Image (cartoon, rainbow, N blue to C red):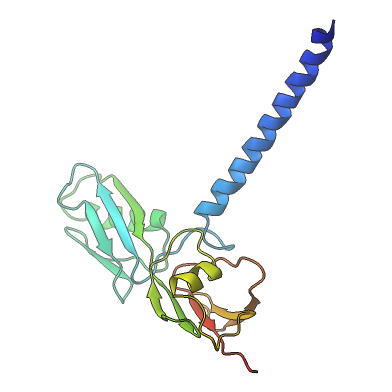
Length: 190
């Protein structure tokens, strides 16, 4: 008798736990793969892309986006990459290869390494650092050796890549850093 009463409740509990875990996992995956609130990752100078052209091992490899925003690819020439997503770059490379001797090229592009972020001001080792997905401002400060004794540890200035103005943030909440961002730790005033 007890078993008949408990079975539906246990089944409902397991189902609810499953649904909650699926939604929680879905949000974690989205947080790791998205770069900005405005949409997918946009390529820029100093990004390195991994190109796979099926059946063409001489073209397959890693290519860096140069200072002019282009990648130089054998049989395709210089292809504009900056300002495009990886899917848009795939289409541009496919079109460039189709003009040459490659018939119906199947192209795949991924980001191999992201452009660096920059941290300056009152940190022990200011400079350029490699980007990692999920990086926060406090992680960046730690990578730069921590604060100097003169640092204002309550606020930070952040200029997003492609944006001309700095925004001030307090350091009491995690703020994500994206490739190409500039972080400035100000000096405190006694």
